[in-house]
Length: 289
Image (cartoon, rainbow, N blue to C red; front, side, top):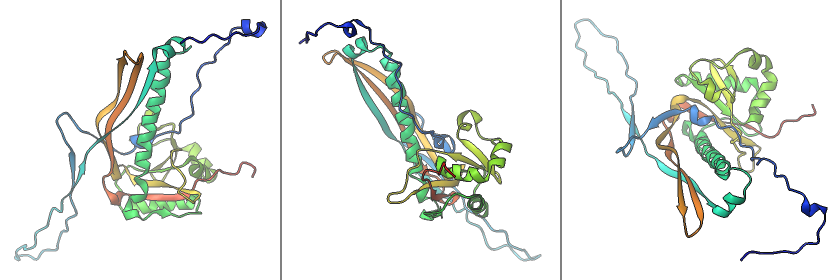
């Protein structure tokens, strides 16, 4: 039923109300999806199996003596599957008629950012389990230049395949930046990484390891530190069978549009030995030094 309200007339009632352009809640950056291995599950496929072979050893030989020992290929496999994620918004015809802006555009952006944030946090959740759960760094430790170099040395000593990257919270990277201002200003992002996709998140390079920031890294419960990661691109992966897809359906009895956004993907450890969680302080930096 329509509602009618009588109001004593005054000048305010005769003035038009101006509605400013819709503002959005700020989202943190999300570089992780573009830093790890990528696989696609095609039509009719149930899973992807990724094989890995071990190392072989060569032996010294003696002339005229038969080579007896043989080597094993040492193959292991990792199975990758996907699962659906998504969200739904209902937009009534009344809302669409009365809203000043394009509501589909507003909620489309909100939904897209929600999927991107979900992907990012799914990958971040893998960090602490790498390297058998043994992290580099510790609580109450800051990401100093010395510690950053030690993390890179850990990656090289343990034969992480190139390219190797380091991701942490902006506050942790900011602390490192205080000590590495010259390096950050002098050297650009190395070749082999997409500047278009990752340029906004790149901060510096130390000994061929690129450092990025992700604001979606959260504090560990009861601590002021969080888990970043130092890893090879081959340490983790995502597999996707359906990219982000939008569906609209009109429900006549509801007098509304249902807007559904879905994606079908999974994120996995691909090689536990090619990465390690990095625990460092991510609390706010002092601005009054």
